[in-house]
Image (cartoon, rainbow, N blue to C red):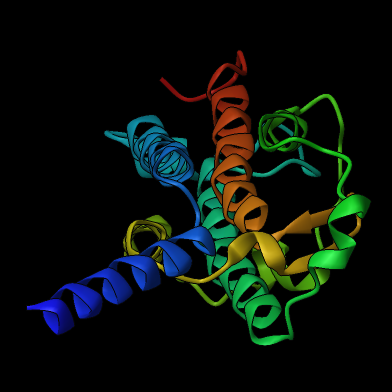
Length: 201
């Protein structure tokens, strides 16, 4: 009986040790909600649009709705590869002091469209090998669902893996939030296209 008690205590202690290295329930819920809400936002904004509406460009140097969706889909995959690559590197918690943004501040910064940023060549719509909006949405949905499942189940110590980004340092958990915020940034762009006075009726 004593041995059983000691074994149970050891397992319980081990479970606490393991859970200390994972993101909290609150963090999981926050990231999951952000990813779900921003996925829903993309689909809501393109629902029912005609081919003419999807391909309308407000100006030669501005993207159409379809181009925005292609960019969102391609970025989703590329940014997950970036997160995965960061997690495969040795943990570097000593760099936590380099992180200057809270989670909420990071999301707000990425979603803020008043700060214009030119994307990398690979993620320019003309360089993305997705044929149309439907194919892009399928790819986006597939990758986003995988990401949400990952957030709900991962035991990785996301806070201990820090990456240096163009906007500053961020841990792997924040990079997951970045993905959700990024899709919302371009959902806002889609809304801007739809608000153009010349948008097809």
